[in-house]
Length: 117
Image (tube, rainbow, N blue to C red; front, side):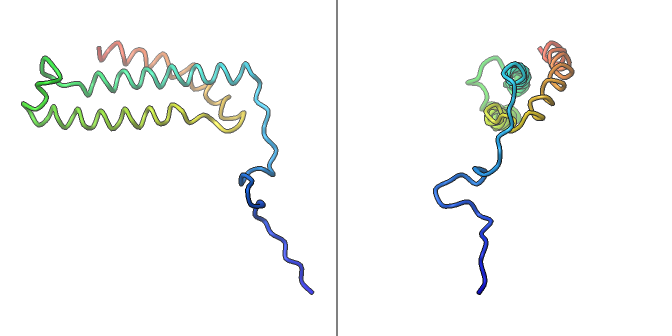
């Protein structure tokens, strides 16, 4: 007689329901989310500025194909950035990484934003 052992989660439960959830301190979570949101916001602002048409208004974008292509690509990149804004880290290490990365990257992103503007 053989006994079959299933490694899959029972029906109706999440695939990672058996794994213990990591405890992330509230301060770490809030600080990391804040730094992450600031960085994504700056990146979004720079992308919007760079992808805007070279002409005077948005309605003159059809005059040159380069402006139309730049606007379409910028719109796609902005959607991709917004999509990633709502993807938060899964564990404490991810939040800790954003703390370290945010402190280093945000000043450079601000400098880039001021240079582009």
